[in-house]
Amino acid sequence: MITFNTQEMQTARNIISAGLVKAAESLSFFMNETITLNEVDQDDQFSVHAIEIEKKNQSNIHLMITKVIGELNGVCCLIFSEEEADQLRNTALPPEVLNSPEMMAEMSDGIMLEVDNIISASVITQFSNMLKVKIYGGVPALRKVDSVELENYLQNEINNELYLISFKTKFKSSHVSFAPEFIWLFDNTFVESIKKFSATAE
Image (cartoon, rainbow, N blue to C red; front, side):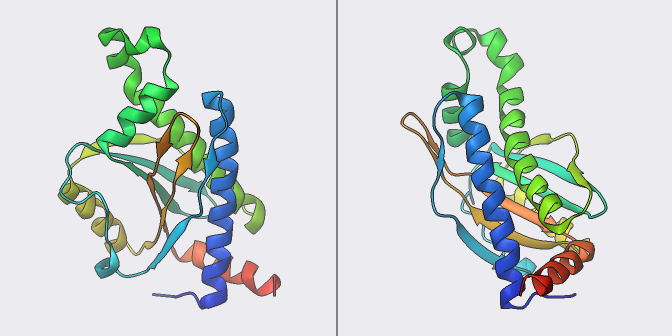
């Protein structure tokens, strides 16, 4: 399996970080309040043995998956605890929805998928622009899993020869603070494109 040197890893980090900043800007518009992104904590993880998910031993974890489609292949995963998901819903949804069990049942997953779409699309667009490749995000999917199912999913993707980088993000406003884990899985086509871009940026 191909690996990054220090500069190439920093290049990948910079692209993802820039995408997450754009995501905060888009979330601000979507939620009608200023959302800022705290400094991103990044883990370089190219080994299945290095996976450590903060939400271990939790149930009803919200795992949102967006496939990268086009000239490069990968998967964006956004991971919320149940508490984080509830907090985001309570901020993003209007009172008439929050006070209606029927409307909540209909819209609670949809609002999470929309947030995932905003964040994933921002990062995918940043990769597309910087690497000059045609890629886009597929329709996002939401799975509610426990910690074992989450780790099994990530293990399976890495077994399919996908690399993994994880970011611990924190989005904040005056009314809400949520810290989803953002996991970027990508294959050799991504690695080669990042290496090529990093070399030209020297």
